[in-house]
Length: 321
Image (cartoon, rainbow, N blue to C red):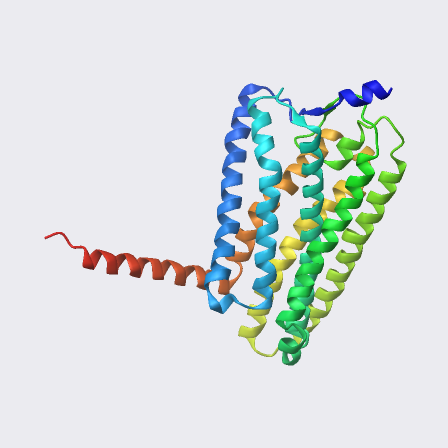
């Protein structure tokens, strides 16, 4: 047994197993999604950094969300694209564990950031006169730092519990990346402790935060309905509806994947859910925030106008004689 355990130094990600032609189509499609994810979130991040009007707590947290979404994509998509072109190309054991750890870290961070953003909206709408006092920069920095630190530590617990397990073979992971539940299926030892910790972590990072978000937005909705000004009411609805769309996409898919009975979701269906969670959510987040948020659209217009003005000035000074 010990000899077999030492032979598993790499894994094969089985991916989708749909044939070379469909794999090529998926490669092109996922490459497009990957590009849009990096460009969209990168644009949001650049606008928040460069436009002083967006230097507020809400956009501070949104910039962290954009970083998480880009990190998501960079962690899982490149390996998926490689496997679509070469199904037999392995991933090392260390690389697989690193991918699992980072995926969990970014998932937990996004969850906690969405909770913090809902609290920010609650304070802004329900306690507007005390907003600058409650959500000062020191508090915002601490909230963001705690979100990252908790996610790193909680993911480290999962990683250490995986590393204690022996892997005797087979070395084929029925997934397109090293997802924790798929990795645990290859362990040749009892994984009950891992399963219990995963369930407890889901309650802590999914169910609890979702309840907090729902309570916050129930109170926000009541406060919005009491606003007399139609323009202020529309602005509040626009900002909050954007955040609710992201919350619904994230928590909905995560709860179905990790807390729904597995017998109701065969492995192929779970791959599709993870595909939505890993590819579409990071790509859709900047679109949701930019299309439904007037301040983000205004910042984008100002950036484009500034660039156009710079080009006109440059051209006027470099006229051909």
